[in-house]
Length: 360
Ligand SMILES: NC(=O)C[C@H](N)C(=O)O
Image 1 (cartoon, rainbow, N blue to C red):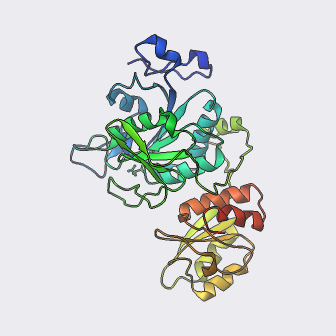
Image 2 (tube, rainbow, N blue to C red):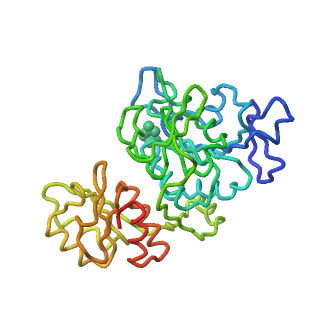
Image 3 (cartoon, rainbow, N blue to C red):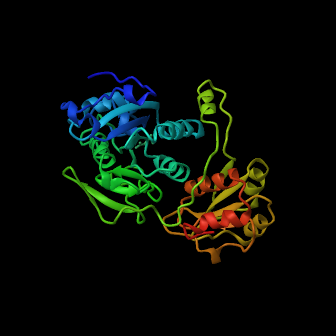
């Protein structure tokens, strides 16, 4: 298989997968796949191993194992990183953001391979910060590529079919796993081991069956979707690879509440962060003493929940600096709060951004 060369000149981009019939060159959708790593690119010591495996495949290795896609789309790739998604940080996320930003006009769709532990954070961040209508599909797997009945190659294969399909346009970022197409705004990992992990109650948009896409609704983005312009110099992001990355986004910490949760931990982190998200005990429950303490802080505090569901606004203190995360997980609430602080939102603008997910 031809090795792809990354080239910023659209005319000269070489596609690793091209149509056999050259007449189709200008008609088949151009898809860029961005490799980030994860279990989808991992191998174990034998085919029965489903834990303790290591990243072992590049995006090029994975593409070589797929069934023929040359009648579906043209593909080129960029390996932005090849890591377990526990190592995904702002620096790597910004590289993915840049890779899509500079290529948005040149491609008809994007596929991002990513570890599933934090795939929902990346899909949410990209959804909120990129201005796009083309399909941006994120995929991963729950079993390493080397395992018996691994979901790795099938998830990658179906992601290309989703990304190459016109009907996937203007639906926001999509997570495609286990034959299900879910909104990257709402999808979350719900099980640490099961292949059926991205089966959230919100944002289940369609199914992938025997090479066909079945969407249940017309194309649309999520209601109340907040959007942010980062206004950063994209060239700065290249500097980061030289090891001198400076955090762009504000620092927001997540605290996990439990029986006996008190003000000590809030007190400890408060001076070091620009904002706090608390994963509360139920639909916004925290001890009265903690609530009272939080209302006196001069940083924003977002009340989220550990489990599925949402935090009604009536359950949280009525104070300017306190916000409900609505349906968002603590991780996603953290990203939304970071973007709000970064955009210098006042508390009322901040509240409005959380209203979109029935919080605020
Ligand atoms: N299934 C997975 O991809 C889990 C892996 N630890 C990751 O997030 O990279």
